[in-house]
Image 1 (cartoon, rainbow, N blue to C red):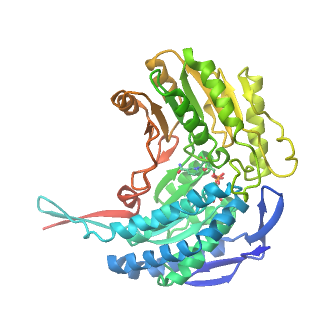
Image 2: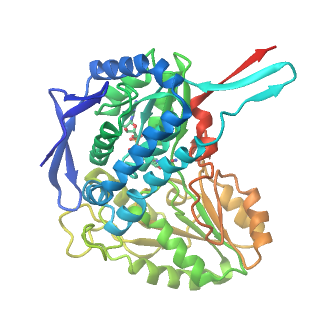
Image 3: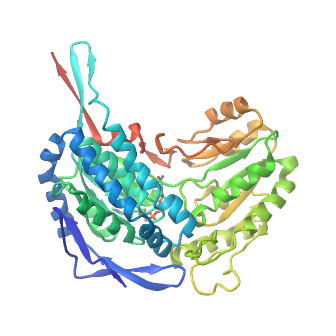
Length: 471
Ligand code: NAD
């Protein structure tokens, strides 16, 4: 049992709340640890510590901030293997992805801001005005469970680089890796109060944090429902809010594309982390003439995602994070079947031999109606909808027929054609012919996928105020 019943406030670990929250291993259904079910008083203590530390950290030199972040990077790098194992155990991410993505991307997040801090402080002159960018204040970082460490580091690294102080409230579902992060934060020697950790449910400690009068910025990643509630609450005291929410991304395979590659990469993308990825390309759009061929290919690739123990390095598909998530996903699969979509592989029952653990069969639907529930709702499981289109105009209309606008993909033998298509898709990111993830590129959504951008230079804007001094 991993007992992390503690908060990290003002540079010290202190015993947590009287009540605790159990953390489960979704592959075995066993309780593997506990964290505090924090209270309003915890949130208040953490925010006050962050407020007290703000003037000093805001005045710290870029070198001092970079040095702390560099030490944090090194402390985290030292713990990479343990962190990967933790996330394989509390999220259920297969070990290969837990190492290469879950434990590795946070290092890139932090390193990119160490690098940016090497540049001189930007200053701008506009006519007789000197325009400055100053730290925005105390930040509340509220994060989800699916990439539990990256979602925290992609907020705290830019916030700390900008000179803000932070209170982190990780997801109550899979919080253990964030405790390992704070072990590294403690060693890195940040001044007390600069980075703080509290734990608990969104409705309790989460709401106490986002309504606290001493919080200036709320940076939220999570569900649309959670985000809308947080934005509403934070608006009452006119806080700055950024939201990173869900997605229903389209993977558009144009008629001249290499179908085999596009389908293979597309299925792998849709099933990454068991489909519990906000950017997952869960709608695969294929030319109607090649629909059956695409389904055959998708079926064979999907069936290669054999469910297994996340700790086994060969496993490609782990369990979903919780019983609630598994039941929700099974519900969507049932709706797909009832709605008349063609079930090509998978289904709404546990995979053979996996009665224990929250496993879901890798599932592909064909001939999906673009307006149907499974083509519109974020399912957050290994469920792919293949949608036929007739011509490029229809492909674009279907791609944009979504309440979300986070990510997507387009494939064509002609890169210029693909780029021209990508320009018309209403999403914050889109990959052309499998273009690689770029940790320095702005990340965020149009429409219901959110407000604001994280990562790289653009990610600093969320944490900076602008001041004009007239000379
Ligand atoms: P969630 O909204 O249930 O919870 C996210 C966080 O918000 C948790 O820490 C939770 O405790 C807290 N929270 C919930 N309600 C709150 C409230 N009223 N006040 C304050 N805090 C509150 O989301 P989840 O289930 O943890 O995460 C899955 C969702 O996150 C999916 O929709 C996914 O697409 C989205 N997501 C988006 C991105 C992105 O960058 N766009 C990245 C990862 C996940």
